[in-house]
Length: 131
View 1 (spheres, one colour):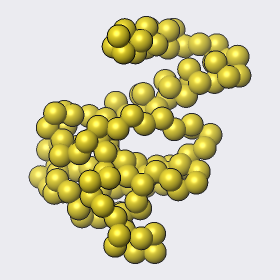
View 2: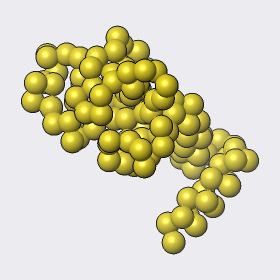
View 3: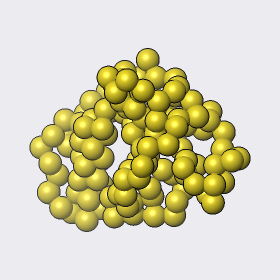
View 4: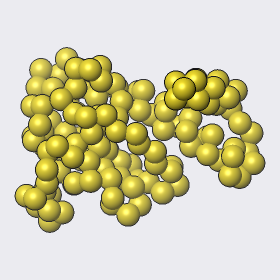
């Protein structure tokens, strides 16, 4: 799903691999945009949850995030605002690629591990798009 086609507003997401947990859950109805949400990632403090947003016919998907844990009344989804669901990536694959790359860049900067070759190009493109 392209960002322009998504019913969700864009969100700049960044999550430290060491401070997140992957845990796929059963699909729940999406409160916005139709289809279903499948939670697959949360940060260490349960401040954000990432979901695979799948449309009903299964023809397309995207990654979205929310501060609410959809699928559990225990976590207050009865008070959740669907406008807080944000678009993150056009596909699960694009999300995982960026997730991996940004963590590799973070470790290179903070821990002195080798910078991935594509990391340098990614930073250049990111900086040029900010101008």
